Length: 612
Image 1 (tube, rainbow, N blue to C red):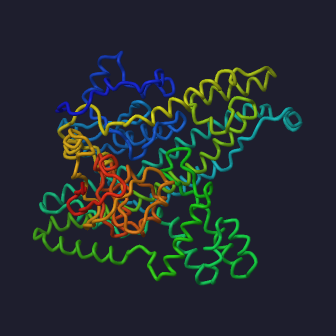
Image 2 (cartoon, rainbow, N blue to C red):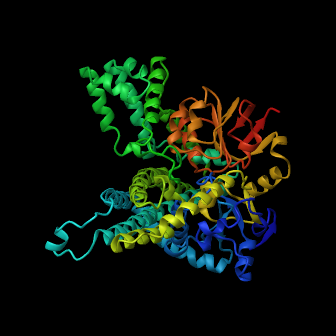
């Protein structure tokens, strides 16, 4: 790989003072090596970029399970299953608690040529049968979710029920608890296998279309192309649509004042049940919840990104906000028709620019494939990161109660400080002590270790992870890296230029033109779901990344800017659907911009101008 040194050597990042020994919290294969020269050379040649898109916070040991899951899953579908021509997969490491990933490309033209043939055959089958295969995918994923929902992870009995003897079961509750834990872990990994069955192909379809368009339409920008695949009803908008429908129903039934005047949901439900109209609304509210209230308040990647079920006041407050907007005569619906008209107009205009019939046919075919694949790019998030993860976190908390009952943990939330391998060992310790009737080793070992790890995680929060480490390659070919994270050779150079000066001195940021339009307004930095409610009408949202659960605020903001993300990141997709300007993948927006500053967002050129 042709490369040049640009960012700091990943092997030279100093540990955060007071965290020495942090490496034992994570599997050994997540650590940069200093003992294997061949591996060290491999690591030194790669570009390692901070995955703030998924992990803006330090990694809790157990929460690493989802990164482990996609570490394997994404790469295997690139390299071993669909044979994406110029890409193998993505390597992973942890630096001071933060995730860094590196795309692994292929440069040998002969190897790429052989992989093209396999890719066309294998990917072609999926592209040609996309809708049928996607329907089967939804069945597979919901089946896994149902299996997890049915797992019983309750505590062990003092004495087994006599049915164990008289039904000749031949196995104990302790054995079953260990087995169910392993099943739970395997269901999690299985769900993530399905996660990438379609996703890489969705991004690849867009990359192939974009490459073709750059050849036949040299002046076409990314924002224009992205509008040609938008204007779709993806399932990820469904939770927010449920809230909008409930707000509309409240006005129709005349119970809007009762809802608005209630400080808490329980107060509203109590008052509403006193009237026939109110009871009708309550029934609709209850019917709207499953599975849509498994929407995470964050990205869904962390255990403390609670779902709407866990934090019920969040959707309730959104309903009240929508009611107030409707009372003012404001629209709460996405401008879907306007976005669709723009899409159809652009497709027609660019098709007419092609005089070569072969090019015209190719454009129509590639565009059709990308449009068919596009909904999955967002839909999978609800099925996996929100619905499945929400159920999964709940089951782990059930197991945590067992550990608390046996003195291993002081609190249910302590469980997250063990990685999944350590948790299996602790569970075996618990079960064998139950079986033998002796004191377990776990309480004396884990209490002090967990307290130490809590301190380490807190210290990690004081570390500002650099956007990238290592080398800057001449080309980046991994489709996920380009479309989701927005990591390209150009963006790397922009980060290097911006990083050469203090963020406070930067007056202009460059990123991806994710959604067109130009807006000036007041910036508001949002670093967590709790800060979302601080956004005021017309303000410009500035965040490391955005979460699908933030969708209700896109009705009130003027534009969005993110540190990380590409043309297919959540912020980019939602802003296009809402007709809002957006610039993503700026690298330093949350460091360079302060809440209250006046800024200008140019979603056509991918520029942000800061009024210093």
